[in-house]
Length: 201
Ligand SMILES: O=c1nc[nH]c2c1ncn2[C@H]1C[C@H](O)[C@@H](COP(=O)(O)OP(=O)(O)OP(=O)(O)O)O1
Ligand SMILES: [Mg+2]
Image (tube, rainbow, N blue to C red; front, side, top):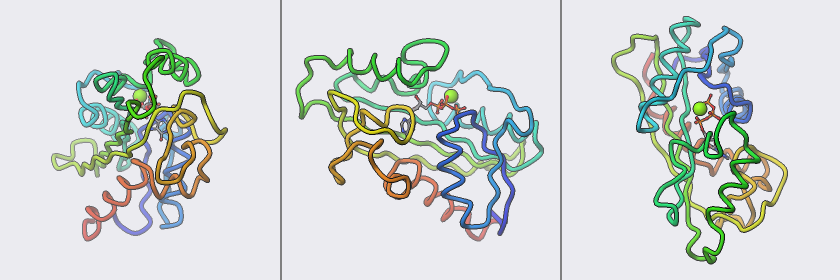
């Protein structure tokens, strides 16, 4: 990514937008939400995070004419054999609802004791220089944690209130934004993507 790139974030998620602006703004990059260009949500028909991220990035770049960054992410819970996984955003059905998803996750894990509630967030980032870019930059990162029995904290988004961060002894929704950005699946994936892109124009 060149110095001071303007890119479109191929996401309708305000929580992701906040985190990417925090990660990329200080480096001089302008992160514009896809809503600025009237990009509408694509159907996430892939069977993997990477396929879904590619679909989102391609559409946002096609419509906006800018390089696009897409994030497809989700929660992988061991006791649920990897669910909700790529279906995390709609775990409790349509329309997407974080509170309903969190309730459904707690129900699904009822009776599962501490120690067997291990989980991880996955984040797959795709960067396309243009809509027909045949060589997308792709990174995949996980963030290990455990699913709490009760929500804690007010910050973040999505499943953050139920995601225990062992290395910090608090939930992801209790972590200061700066710390979440440094530790999280998304923060570390962005760092890895920037490393991959350095030297690229
Ligand atoms: O740091 C996170 N903290 C809490 N929850 C998170 C995080 N990262 C992903 N998640 C959850 C939210 C959503 O339930 C799913 C992502 O689904 P995903 O399709 O990638 O995003 P989305 O539909 O909200 O927005 P969009 O597709 O427009 O980018 O995983
Ligand atoms: Mg989505």
